Length: 102
Image (cartoon, rainbow, N blue to C red; front, side):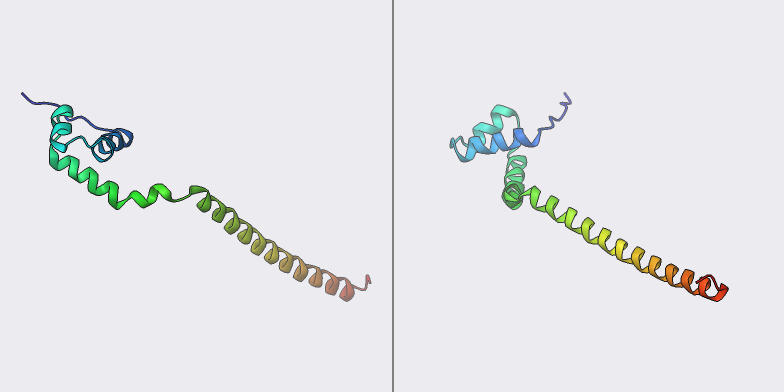
């Protein structure tokens, strides 16, 4: 009588936890209904409370940070390019002077 384990999605886990926390359904009743061990339920609850702050983080804040880093990197690259071009132009002018073309 081997039963395959059911894999719950994060949404399903939250819905089960919500039934207990908001609808006041007892853990024993929930676990019997969905054939879940209470230890698994309490582990989900612990993970939910430990990582609950991540639900309130704004992802767009991280996305705003990435373009700023890209802008700074591109500006640094442009500065280096300008320096190299300046050095090349100096060498070019010096060479022209030495050859008597200026």
